[in-house]
Length: 136
Image (cartoon, rainbow, N blue to C red; front, side, top):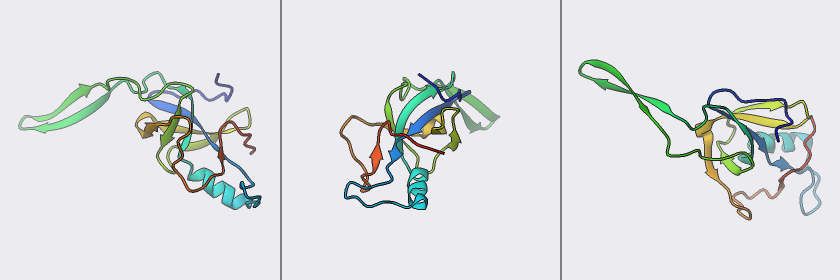
C-alpha cells in the first residue's frame, strides 16, 4: 500500500530504496555523510507504485529515404509489480521524501534493471536492510 503521498505519472515507477544502516554488523558507527553517500548510490529497493503507462510501450524513430517514421513497439510484459524487490541504475531517478517521512526514488520504468530474489547479495557493503526506518 502506498502511504507516501507520491503517485507516479506516465511511465514512472516509485521505489523505496533499501535502507543503509548506520551501524555495521561489526559495530562500526557510520557517519551521516557516509550513510547519505551510500543511500545516493543505492541500487536496490521495493516497488511501491507504478504509473499508468509503465512498461506499456515506447516509440522508436527510424530514418528512411522518405523522412522520419515512428514505430510503436511494446514490451512483452511489465518488468516488475508492486512489492517486487528490484535493482535500478546507480544514482538513478529523483530522490523525494514522502509524507510518511521515508525517502523514495522516482525512476523511469526502463531504469529498473533486474528483479531480485530473496537471498541474493550483489554488493560488498552489507548495511542494507529491507523495511528499515529512514528519517529525514
